[in-house]
View (cartoon, rainbow, N blue to C red):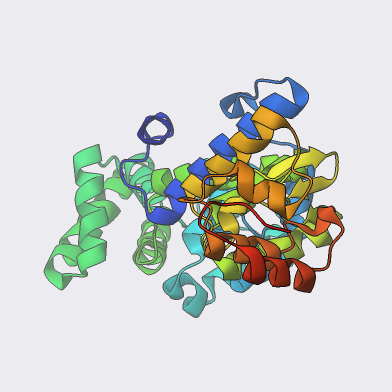
Length: 364
């Protein structure tokens, strides 16, 4: 996982990000197996229409940084059409920009409801991708460099000064900016107006490189969901197999996507959720309560050595009773993992309670 982080330029990553990278890696493995295709996500098109349709419809359950109800509501309003829209959205989805109305203004400008104007021609190439709004700290640095001739070190000093809002330093920076802009033949009144905009917007400015790196993970995750939905959902469900609340949410999401989730089965299930058809996923035994890794290995080993299990009696004889104990079997019965044996669960429980013995076979 750390190698993947370094490739996309992230030095720090929270748990959610690491989990998402695990989902991406698991999904690509399933794709390779089901399609005999080695998918290199770093090579996928950044303008995939299926992916942007998914964004516009806010079908982003399970997508990194984009699955909250608030974010999905914004996606419906924004209707992203390019990667830069996702980068900006992640940078703007914070209390400051939302509270100031900056995010609403961004959405209106994107849809042409508010005209985008630039106080000076030099601002257009810097602010065009964010519809004339200063969103990133890097934009502040570019503005003062292009308009007032600030060096990178001077520009970074201004960026930090805006964050600290120290009056003495800000007054000094204002004077330096205006003098530099006038030397570059920018009208003084326009220079003063631009600096006021810098002060206002830069207080909410976000690090673009950070937002872009996160947006890339969001985009790649969404690309998988849009283009390989069954493989993606199998990987997503596997990643949350210890979180029953998330499992329920994602099963509901799968149903919305016309993906059938089959119940656990002792003859078909593995530890992970697995793709067993073009639109079908088999529930993973790893998500069944009380069924540990050792028990799952014993079950899989039993059927791989001697074929499918045909009865509860046979199941108990062929598995390791130290790993597959009574509690494990009870959980498997209750979750439906023996339903394919064509006996009612109550019958199976009665058989288990009456005949289970330490030698791991039934006397009938």
